[in-house]
Length: 126
Image (cartoon, rainbow, N blue to C red):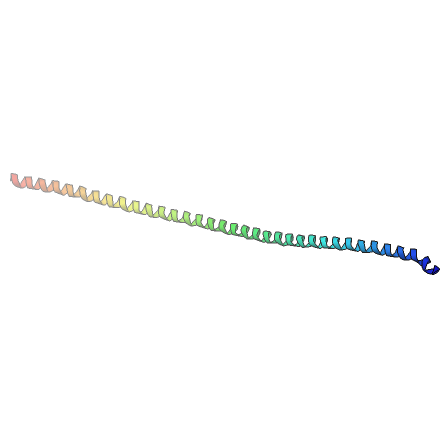
């Protein structure tokens, strides 16, 4: 019995040390759990940021595409305006020619009418 009592304090020390180690293990398990949660949240945030970066790139590309399309539309509009200007000029030239011809016909017609009247007057006097 004396031998048992000799080992009892050592046994109690070992039990106390064992309890301290178990408590430390529980603390480390909680720390590990918190670390895993933080890691998961970090991965989720990383995935979210990667998704936002991809969306941002897609928006940038869409903006570039729209800018190119707008530039092409401006060029087409300028070409259309130039073409319309050319057609307007051609139409104005045609109108001017027709006016000249019409006024020439009117003038010739007036001259003919004057000559006819002069002829009629000359016939009547004769």
